[in-house]
Length: 222
Image 1 (cartoon, helix red, strand yellow):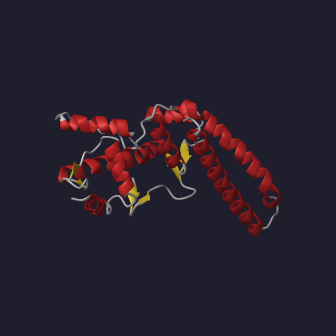
Image 2: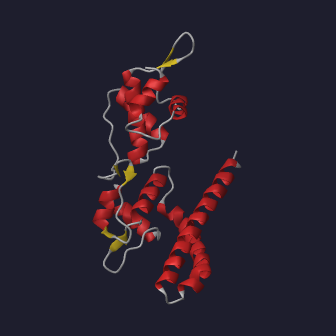
Image 3: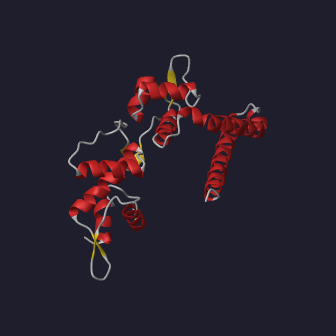
């Protein structure tokens, strides 16, 4: 298959995959397509399956490429590959499945939805990344927090290293609270709704600013 043919095969399962992504996986040594005399890439069915394996591991288990590369080497050598724990339900129609807004989930449900172990969840709770109420239940948004923390852990960044992220978010929330407090203090329901909408908008702007500043700082690492 040509690179376009592989893309057509994978697109239904991985809508975000692109030609540049396929070339990147080749550069990282995960797949080695044959080259024609004119220099065009030609992929076998086995090549396509290796790419599918890599994309699935990234999407469902947040594995770094070095781990995926090692797993592929083990498979090539006929050795069994231990699959990491993962959420039982990950996506539906391409969208991440999470509890509805305002929902509360138990520790067991949170572990099931994210693939986290009880020990990992306990470590995140001790670091203040997720907080349970008096009944031991977590907000639905904790699902995304735990999944992100698990992905970072696979790169060697533990929950305790993420405390500064939590404290930074809390400081930003305090600033947002000061901005929306005058509107929220009004008694009308419309004013409270306006306050909530403004807070959500400010949070999104803070998130965008943080992401861009982080990318800039990483670029400066050389």
